[in-house]
Length: 119
Image (cartoon, rainbow, N blue to C red):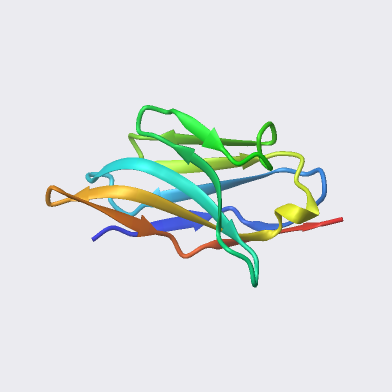
């Protein structure tokens, strides 16, 4: 088993920045695609950004130009740099990763971290 642990959430004012981290509990497993999602109460979970093992990235239209996803494969850690935050970015942010364990791929999730942006 592997756990994903997010960190870096918090309360900021509009226009400020935050960096989220998502670290796998084991550095010896193979990790494929990694993703950041966010969700607000009563709404569906939204894919914020995705990064492949080769570093290919995709972003939601609402975050393009403001958010940057990256990863450190040696540390099995993914990051989300969020700049120029807006109140509508307020949500619980969760990471997800495709992990190979015993020759099988599975999708794992972190517990989520709250990001609150005040106006």
